[in-house]
Amino acid sequence: MSLRWKIALLLAVVVTLGVGTSSILTYRTTDSRLNDEVDRSLVNATERFLRRPEIGRGRAVIDVPERPLGVELFVVQVLDSRGNVLAATDGVTLPITSPRVDSRGQVVPGFDTVETAEGVDYRVRSVAVSVGVVQFGRDLTETNNVLADLRRRLVVTTLSIVVIVAVIGWLIALGVTSRLRRLSQAVETVATTGRLDVEAPVSGRDEAGRLGRTFRDMLGALSQSREQQQRLVEDAGHELRTPLTSLRTNLDVIRKHGDLDDSTRRQILSDIDRDVSDLESLVEEVVALAADRHADELPEPVRLSDSVAPLVDRARRRSGRMVSLSTDDSICVVRRHMFERAVSNLIDNALKFDTSGGEIGVDVMRGTVVVSDRGPGIPADEQSKVFERFHRAVNARTLPGSGLGLSIVSDVAEAHGGKAFARDRVGGGAEVGFTLPLGG
Image (cartoon, rainbow, N blue to C red; front, side, top):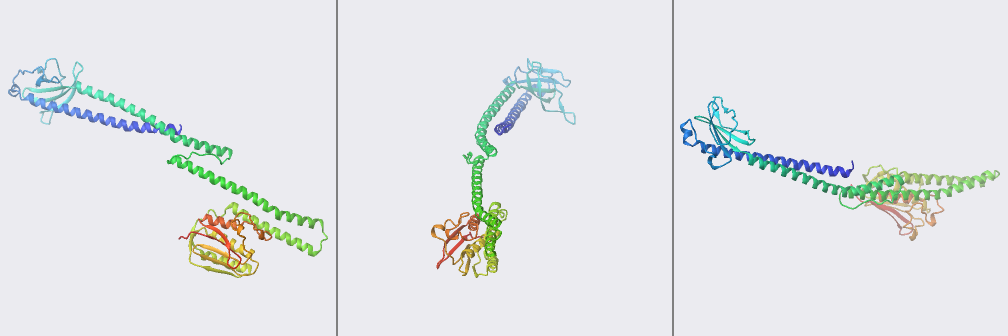
């Protein structure tokens, strides 16, 4: 059964239960109220009849008017102690019912519903008198007709409401499920064809509309991710060709010229070692970007100086250079390993480009990490491009590196709600870093 039918059927069932329960309660309340009114009228009529003088004197013959009290609904039947009819309203014979007696054997007033030989229902009240028992009855034809008409009206009304609600439910379900149906078709198209340029229904502010917008955003994110992966593969393939071509050329030279002098052989081996290092660095960076190995790391409040200080000490030991550190007590919510990788890339980048042997400065202030060097600097037209993958400035193309280090810095900054930047350093060189929102 489709969702549309389920919604329409559910609405019809709920309304049927609600209206049906209400109709039953209405009918029972009306029935009870009418019976109470009939019983009350019987009590009043009985009391008036019992005030007749012949009843009080216990006469053997009692004159019963054709219609007591002038009301055609009422009839009277008087019985002696043996159940014989002493007097009765002409034309009506009430069935004799067993009187109610108490523990002392005394007849107590009570109500019964009986049916005459003519098929007419009467409500009967039996009362003990000196001559026996008086049965005072009221015709229920009028009451039964009212209740029968009420039953018909309630049934017709209930069925009409159920039909109307079922139609309305169908229309509502049609409106809701039409968007879900289009969304389902879009999902099936993506699953069968792999296309991500599929339109999703996003109208409405309800759950179906939000689901459509979420699906659209998901398709956009998947499309962007696919484009980035494709670009990464293409760029990585392009970058890998250079060291591989150099390696193949050097190996061909060694293979074809076995009589090379030692100086030339050492130079070729040095070139091979450099190409292998470049390949190793490039593969490591590409794998890190493709695998996003720290994506499952949970953010935590980190005092930035506590994470940066060990990185600065390691850079000093490895390079033998002077690397200064200036920090405050900034605390940011970060993925620690991603943050440390970005800072390491900035320091390594500065050490690589600054060939002056001068001091490398690392400043961590108010959530901003800046690494400054005294190298050749970054041309103004290149400063906005250095964070692109595999982009290398003209003055850096002869230096080792993959062209991915600063791209990773930018990705880390944006993943934490920050932004990377590059600018000229006063006095020469460059300042490269990123900002993070303060927190914790």
